[in-house]
Image (cartoon, rainbow, N blue to C red):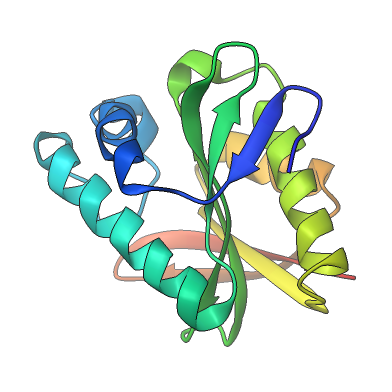
Length: 165
């Protein structure tokens, strides 16, 4: 799928190095679960892409690679994973800090939600963020997600937002 500035497409194994380069940035992984080790970025990228390729086959959806159309650069991911914990599709997104503050996360999340509603026929999706991740929460709100709950997971203070189609 193409938007004004972005292309959303399935990840490929060839994306591993570019994706690992994003995961090496401490400011990018600061808000990701499990306190990502930037020194393990290559392994993390390979594991995540493999997991998402499997999810795409088994569940019919998984996060997509987000490509900046003008440069052809992989700038992050957006999409859904089947969440056993929350028993609903969970929106995931992360972007290279070089592309923050330009509205790309909002553009990508809106596109992903459009796909969720119109192509995947999902009636509801949710998203979770650390309470301190003000930028991510702002994206959720801009895209129509509504606050549902405060959560705590392993010492992390989280918020859950949901979007019903």
